[in-house]
Length: 186
Image (cartoon, rainbow, N blue to C red; front, side, top):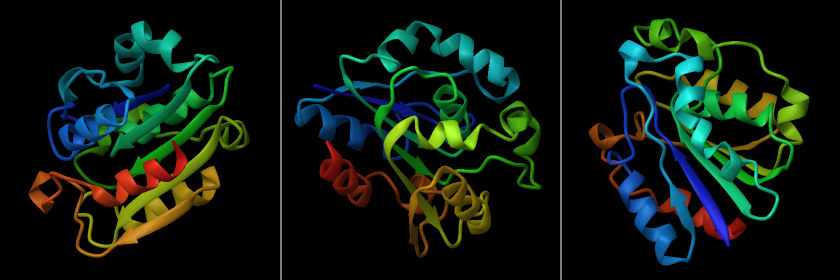
């Protein structure tokens, strides 16, 4: 079986954007899908997210399952933190609008504890497949940040035109291109 974790971004949850679409499609394919809920921006920091994820850790770092992580916005930075600590490589990671350093906007404050240098070599070995999705017109995450992220994790990158931040405001209530990439691997 394949177990898929969906990680939302700052102020998000697993019932917005393309998460319901992806969750339903993956469940229809026989995947177990887990969508942890993380603290909002007011209580958001790396430690609070780690605490919220603690109950899921044994399912994430599980050698008996094919584990996949799908993360959006600040979610990829949190997954980097997890990948530094896994003992068993994941099958795949899919990072949507990722970044790991300050963006120079209002999101830098709630995201500050996530924005650091990571053990890049360790991370590259912590997943068999890593893919990045970025938008040329993301209003929050400049394309260069996602390109740098992809390079640091050794990932291929797919750049979309006019995808904004891959959220409902940009028309992303479904995400067939991401589902297709997941299907190729699982």
